[in-house]
Image (cartoon, rainbow, N blue to C red; front, side, top):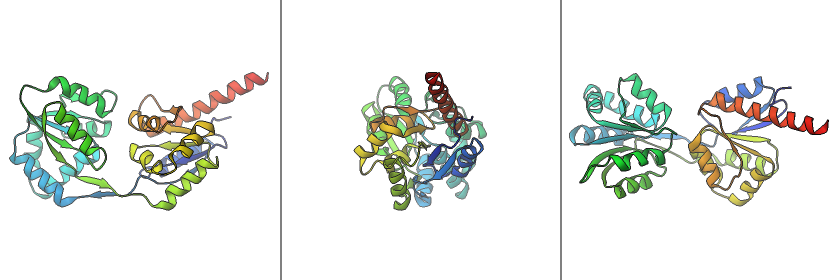
Length: 273
Protein backbone atom coordinates (compact mmCIF):
# COMPACT_ATOMS: atom_id res chain seq x y z
CA UNK A 1 0.00 0.00 0.00
CA UNK A 2 1.31 3.48 -0.91
CA UNK A 3 2.15 5.72 2.01
CA UNK A 4 -0.33 8.40 0.98
CA UNK A 5 -3.19 5.94 0.39
CA UNK A 6 -6.36 7.64 1.73
CA UNK A 7 -4.31 10.35 3.50
CA UNK A 8 -5.88 13.82 3.57
CA UNK A 9 -3.24 16.38 2.59
CA UNK A 10 -3.75 20.13 2.99
CA UNK A 11 -1.82 22.25 0.49
CA UNK A 12 -0.98 25.81 1.53
CA UNK A 13 0.74 26.68 -1.75
CA UNK A 14 -0.65 28.93 -4.45
CA UNK A 15 1.81 28.57 -7.30
CA UNK A 16 2.06 24.96 -8.54
CA UNK A 17 -0.69 23.81 -6.20
CA UNK A 18 -2.26 21.85 -9.08
CA UNK A 19 0.99 19.99 -9.69
CA UNK A 20 1.27 19.13 -5.99
CA UNK A 21 -2.37 18.00 -5.92
CA UNK A 22 -1.79 15.68 -8.88
CA UNK A 23 1.23 14.12 -7.18
CA UNK A 24 -0.81 13.49 -4.04
CA UNK A 25 -3.64 11.95 -6.10
CA UNK A 26 -1.24 9.74 -8.04
CA UNK A 27 0.01 8.33 -4.73
CA UNK A 28 -3.51 7.58 -3.52
CA UNK A 29 -4.00 10.62 -1.31
CA UNK A 30 -6.75 13.23 -1.14
CA UNK A 31 -5.50 16.82 -1.67
CA UNK A 32 -7.26 19.88 -0.28
CA UNK A 33 -6.09 23.24 -1.60
CA UNK A 34 -5.91 26.27 0.69
CA UNK A 35 -3.85 28.89 -1.21
CA UNK A 36 -2.69 31.16 1.64
CA UNK A 37 0.41 32.64 0.01
CA UNK A 38 -1.33 35.91 -0.78
CA UNK A 39 -1.34 37.76 -4.07
CA UNK A 40 2.03 38.81 -5.41
CA UNK A 41 2.12 42.47 -6.42
CA UNK A 42 4.88 43.97 -8.56
CA UNK A 43 5.84 47.60 -8.01
CA UNK A 44 6.79 48.58 -11.54
CA UNK A 45 7.63 52.24 -10.83
CA UNK A 46 9.81 51.29 -7.85
CA UNK A 47 11.55 48.59 -9.91
CA UNK A 48 12.37 51.13 -12.58
CA UNK A 49 13.79 53.49 -9.96
CA UNK A 50 15.81 50.67 -8.38
CA UNK A 51 17.37 49.81 -11.74
CA UNK A 52 18.13 53.47 -12.46
CA UNK A 53 19.76 53.93 -9.06
CA UNK A 54 21.72 50.70 -9.43
CA UNK A 55 23.20 51.76 -12.74
CA UNK A 56 24.10 55.23 -11.46
CA UNK A 57 25.54 54.33 -8.06
CA UNK A 58 28.58 52.33 -7.01
CA UNK A 59 28.15 49.05 -5.16
CA UNK A 60 30.68 46.53 -3.94
CA UNK A 61 28.09 43.82 -3.41
CA UNK A 62 24.72 42.84 -4.87
CA UNK A 63 22.58 40.52 -2.75
CA UNK A 64 19.75 38.72 -4.54
CA UNK A 65 17.43 36.89 -2.16
CA UNK A 66 14.75 35.48 -4.51
CA UNK A 67 14.42 34.37 -8.09
CA UNK A 68 11.23 36.42 -8.45
CA UNK A 69 13.06 39.54 -7.32
CA UNK A 70 15.94 39.03 -9.73
CA UNK A 71 13.59 38.41 -12.65
CA UNK A 72 11.44 41.42 -11.75
CA UNK A 73 14.44 43.74 -11.79
CA UNK A 74 15.55 42.13 -15.04
CA UNK A 75 12.13 42.84 -16.57
CA UNK A 76 12.28 46.47 -15.41
CA UNK A 77 15.68 46.83 -17.05
CA UNK A 78 14.22 45.48 -20.30
CA UNK A 79 11.32 47.94 -20.14
CA UNK A 80 13.77 50.82 -19.66
CA UNK A 81 15.91 49.44 -22.53
CA UNK A 82 18.99 49.22 -20.30
CA UNK A 83 19.11 45.45 -19.83
CA UNK A 84 22.54 45.04 -21.43
CA UNK A 85 23.98 47.64 -19.06
CA UNK A 86 22.18 45.99 -16.12
CA UNK A 87 23.56 42.51 -16.85
CA UNK A 88 27.01 43.87 -17.70
CA UNK A 89 27.25 45.69 -14.38
CA UNK A 90 26.05 42.63 -12.45
CA UNK A 91 28.79 40.61 -14.14
CA UNK A 92 31.38 43.05 -12.77
CA UNK A 93 30.00 43.12 -9.21
CA UNK A 94 30.37 40.69 -6.32
CA UNK A 95 27.13 38.71 -6.22
CA UNK A 96 25.82 37.05 -3.06
CA UNK A 97 22.69 34.95 -3.57
CA UNK A 98 20.19 32.77 -1.74
CA UNK A 99 17.87 30.17 -3.19
CA UNK A 100 17.94 27.71 -6.09
CA UNK A 101 15.64 29.83 -8.26
CA UNK A 102 17.96 32.80 -7.89
CA UNK A 103 20.92 30.66 -8.92
CA UNK A 104 18.91 29.41 -11.93
CA UNK A 105 18.42 33.00 -13.06
CA UNK A 106 22.14 33.69 -12.71
CA UNK A 107 22.97 30.66 -14.85
CA UNK A 108 20.53 31.77 -17.54
CA UNK A 109 22.47 35.03 -17.79
CA UNK A 110 26.00 33.58 -17.43
CA UNK A 111 26.46 35.27 -14.07
CA UNK A 112 28.48 33.66 -11.28
CA UNK A 113 28.04 34.39 -7.57
CA UNK A 114 30.94 35.00 -5.22
CA UNK A 115 28.91 33.85 -2.23
CA UNK A 116 25.94 31.47 -1.95
CA UNK A 117 23.93 30.19 1.00
CA UNK A 118 24.69 26.48 1.09
CA UNK A 119 21.53 25.71 3.05
CA UNK A 120 19.36 28.30 1.30
CA UNK A 121 19.01 30.59 4.32
CA UNK A 122 19.79 34.26 4.76
CA UNK A 123 21.44 33.44 8.08
CA UNK A 124 24.00 31.29 6.29
CA UNK A 125 24.58 33.94 3.64
CA UNK A 126 25.11 36.64 6.28
CA UNK A 127 27.69 34.44 8.01
CA UNK A 128 29.72 34.64 4.81
CA UNK A 129 29.03 38.37 4.46
CA UNK A 130 30.35 38.96 7.97
CA UNK A 131 33.82 37.80 6.99
CA UNK A 132 33.65 39.42 3.55
CA UNK A 133 33.14 43.00 4.74
CA UNK A 134 36.24 45.10 4.11
CA UNK A 135 37.35 47.97 6.29
CA UNK A 136 35.10 50.98 5.98
CA UNK A 137 31.52 50.84 4.70
CA UNK A 138 31.01 48.53 1.74
CA UNK A 139 27.99 49.59 -0.31
CA UNK A 140 25.40 46.83 -0.86
CA UNK A 141 22.42 46.61 -3.22
CA UNK A 142 19.98 44.36 -1.34
CA UNK A 143 17.03 42.87 -3.22
CA UNK A 144 14.32 41.83 -0.76
CA UNK A 145 10.53 42.11 -0.44
CA UNK A 146 8.02 43.01 2.26
CA UNK A 147 9.03 40.25 4.67
CA UNK A 148 11.92 40.72 7.09
CA UNK A 149 13.25 43.38 4.71
CA UNK A 150 14.08 45.90 7.44
CA UNK A 151 15.58 43.16 9.60
CA UNK A 152 17.85 42.11 6.74
CA UNK A 153 18.88 45.73 6.18
CA UNK A 154 19.64 46.32 9.86
CA UNK A 155 21.57 43.04 10.12
CA UNK A 156 23.82 44.06 7.22
CA UNK A 157 24.32 47.53 8.68
CA UNK A 158 25.43 45.99 11.96
CA UNK A 159 28.01 44.02 9.98
CA UNK A 160 29.39 47.30 8.67
CA UNK A 161 27.65 47.59 5.31
CA UNK A 162 25.86 50.58 3.81
CA UNK A 163 22.62 49.26 2.32
CA UNK A 164 20.41 50.26 -0.61
CA UNK A 165 17.13 48.36 -0.14
CA UNK A 166 15.31 47.26 -3.28
CA UNK A 167 11.79 45.82 -2.88
CA UNK A 168 10.57 45.02 -6.41
CA UNK A 169 7.50 43.11 -5.21
CA UNK A 170 5.32 42.40 -2.21
CA UNK A 171 2.63 39.98 -1.09
CA UNK A 172 -0.88 41.10 -0.20
CA UNK A 173 -2.70 39.16 2.55
CA UNK A 174 -4.46 35.98 1.36
CA UNK A 175 -8.24 35.65 1.24
CA UNK A 176 -9.60 34.96 4.71
CA UNK A 177 -11.77 32.06 3.54
CA UNK A 178 -8.66 30.04 2.66
CA UNK A 179 -6.84 30.86 5.90
CA UNK A 180 -9.95 30.11 7.99
CA UNK A 181 -10.60 26.93 6.03
CA UNK A 182 -7.10 25.61 6.62
CA UNK A 183 -7.23 26.54 10.31
CA UNK A 184 -10.52 24.69 10.72
CA UNK A 185 -9.17 21.61 8.96
CA UNK A 186 -6.12 21.58 11.23
CA UNK A 187 -7.95 22.24 14.49
CA UNK A 188 -10.57 19.57 13.76
CA UNK A 189 -7.97 17.10 12.44
CA UNK A 190 -9.72 17.00 9.06
CA UNK A 191 -6.31 16.70 7.40
CA UNK A 192 -3.48 14.29 8.21
CA UNK A 193 -0.72 16.63 6.99
CA UNK A 194 -0.23 20.12 5.60
CA UNK A 195 2.47 20.97 3.06
CA UNK A 196 4.00 24.44 3.00
CA UNK A 197 6.15 25.79 0.18
CA UNK A 198 7.13 29.17 1.64
CA UNK A 199 7.77 31.01 4.87
CA UNK A 200 5.03 33.49 3.93
CA UNK A 201 2.36 30.78 4.05
CA UNK A 202 3.40 29.80 7.58
CA UNK A 203 3.32 33.40 8.80
CA UNK A 204 -0.13 33.95 7.28
CA UNK A 205 -1.52 30.83 8.97
CA UNK A 206 -0.18 31.66 12.43
CA UNK A 207 -1.25 35.30 12.66
CA UNK A 208 -4.16 34.33 14.92
CA UNK A 209 -4.85 31.39 17.26
CA UNK A 210 -1.17 30.47 17.21
CA UNK A 211 -1.21 28.32 20.34
CA UNK A 212 -4.21 26.25 19.23
CA UNK A 213 -2.76 25.66 15.77
CA UNK A 214 0.64 24.69 17.19
CA UNK A 215 -1.02 22.28 19.62
CA UNK A 216 -2.98 20.65 16.77
CA UNK A 217 0.18 20.12 14.73
CA UNK A 218 2.03 18.67 17.71
CA UNK A 219 -0.91 16.41 18.48
CA UNK A 220 -1.94 14.74 15.23
CA UNK A 221 -1.34 16.86 12.10
CA UNK A 222 2.04 16.53 10.34
CA UNK A 223 3.75 19.74 9.17
CA UNK A 224 5.68 19.37 5.91
CA UNK A 225 8.08 21.98 4.49
CA UNK A 226 9.64 22.22 1.05
CA UNK A 227 12.98 23.41 2.44
CA UNK A 228 14.97 24.73 5.38
CA UNK A 229 13.65 28.31 5.36
CA UNK A 230 10.03 27.15 5.52
CA UNK A 231 10.89 24.42 8.04
CA UNK A 232 12.64 26.94 10.29
CA UNK A 233 9.57 29.18 10.34
CA UNK A 234 7.37 26.22 11.31
CA UNK A 235 9.80 25.36 14.11
CA UNK A 236 9.73 29.00 15.23
CA UNK A 237 5.98 28.58 15.74
CA UNK A 238 6.64 25.80 18.22
CA UNK A 239 6.04 22.78 15.98
CA UNK A 240 8.16 19.88 17.21
CA UNK A 241 8.16 17.62 14.15
CA UNK A 242 8.64 19.15 10.70
CA UNK A 243 9.18 16.86 7.72
CA UNK A 244 11.28 18.10 4.81
CA UNK A 245 13.08 16.55 1.82
CA UNK A 246 16.87 16.45 1.45
CA UNK A 247 16.61 18.65 -1.65
CA UNK A 248 14.17 21.61 -1.58
CA UNK A 249 11.94 20.50 -4.44
CA UNK A 250 8.15 20.14 -4.42
CA UNK A 251 8.20 16.68 -6.00
CA UNK A 252 10.82 15.48 -3.53
CA UNK A 253 8.67 16.86 -0.69
CA UNK A 254 5.67 14.71 -1.65
CA UNK A 255 7.85 11.64 -2.21
CA UNK A 256 9.38 12.18 1.25
CA UNK A 257 5.89 12.45 2.74
CA UNK A 258 4.82 9.23 1.02
CA UNK A 259 7.89 7.40 2.35
CA UNK A 260 7.29 8.78 5.83
CA UNK A 261 3.83 7.22 5.95
CA UNK A 262 5.15 3.98 4.46
CA UNK A 263 7.64 3.80 7.31
CA UNK A 264 4.95 4.58 9.87
CA UNK A 265 2.74 1.82 8.45
CA UNK A 266 5.61 -0.68 8.49
CA UNK A 267 6.37 0.11 12.13
CA UNK A 268 2.70 -0.28 13.08
CA UNK A 269 2.38 -3.62 11.30
CA UNK A 270 5.56 -4.89 12.93
CA UNK A 271 4.24 -3.92 16.35
CA UNK A 272 1.05 -5.89 15.69
CA UNK A 273 2.91 -9.12 14.85
